[in-house]
Image 1 (spheres, helix red, strand yellow):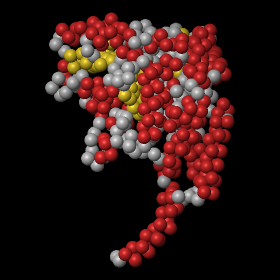
Image 2 (image 1 turned 135 degrees about the horizontal axis):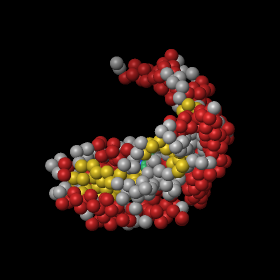
Image 3 (image 1 turned 120 degrees about the vertical axis):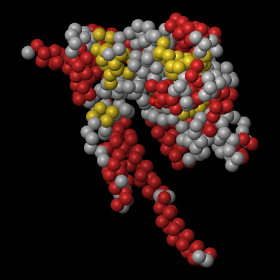
Image 4 (image 1 turned 180 degrees about the horizontal axis):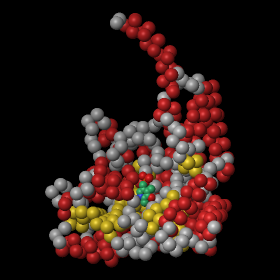
Length: 487
Ligand SMILES: *Cc1c(COP(=O)(O)O)cnc(C)c1O
């Protein structure tokens, strides 16, 4: 092929490849249709279901129609709304009380829009010092909340699971766990520890270490006495206590482990203390709850999920490590082709502190809402969630339900005690009835064989009206079931 032919061919290809760049009018038209759908959804949020149910109606072929020709944006948006926007759990709803709800404050969506259009490269300082400085600033703010010394480093991850993985990998290396000592190394946590810790330990090669379940007290908090005893027994047996995982806000009940005492034990026995505060971490912003965080600054690492208790959209977690050198030692890589990366480095770069290289610049969706709205509404919303949970805890008992321990943060477990062996199925039926109603979504847990319903009050859109609605539905359904049993 000679050069002139090549030019002709390239001109022909360019005509089509330029379709990837819509015209200004087209962009404006698409923007307005997309924005309209987003704003309308938020506008109607209190009148649409919190739960749409599972109907097994979606087929992969629905999403491959483009192979038969493109459709234009209106059809694409219709497919999105019908099959995704109105499907399963409406996680944007203030009526979402299941699992640990997320958020989705609006300015974050606009941040993501800008990030996707500008597409800055956020992995290395030299590629975009603004991205890295902004993310490091947000991490520094969190480290300040926790009270870490300025040796800290951290990473904004996709979520709590990856944050826990980064922490476990760092702990493994920092504690010198290698194949020839792993079977004598011991890792401690409770039955209430989130399963992402089990996954993280397995992924980072610690499944052959000894895993010990430490007992919990009546409020599902780690027993510090049992931790100390177990560690001392393990030392006598010639084993090496290595890592302790505590929680601030367990998923089942929102329990907060006694961090300060656990930190004493870890210090005495040279254990790495990791705190999984994926759900509970940002409650440190509530003055009345600060006492529960006593000793957090003494941990070696901590996971906090801005996509939970800072109400950001999914895909924003964070891990902080007190001695920043350790997280870098476990995660950096000096690739020969990344010459600039280590010649221009002034600040730690995300790529040196996580398994990721190229990544979404998730810092902007964290920063923009705070920059526009300030911290105050976030703090107040967290206090509101905590008090809504206390309110629910009192009211549900007035309706004759049994409750678990007094909620420490914003998760309450409850069940109706029928007084016979049908109690579990009665409560399961109750849950299904709430889900069928659709205005509120609830999820259960099973603790020691007992089926509990949970109210996890975490959405920034949840206010007292939603709690009253749930109480009303629960009471009505419970009375209906009891009446049916009587006839
Ligand atoms: C949600 C949660 C996780 C996992 O975080 P993801 O962001 O879902 O990956 C870990 N630990 C606790 C305590 C959690 O509540």
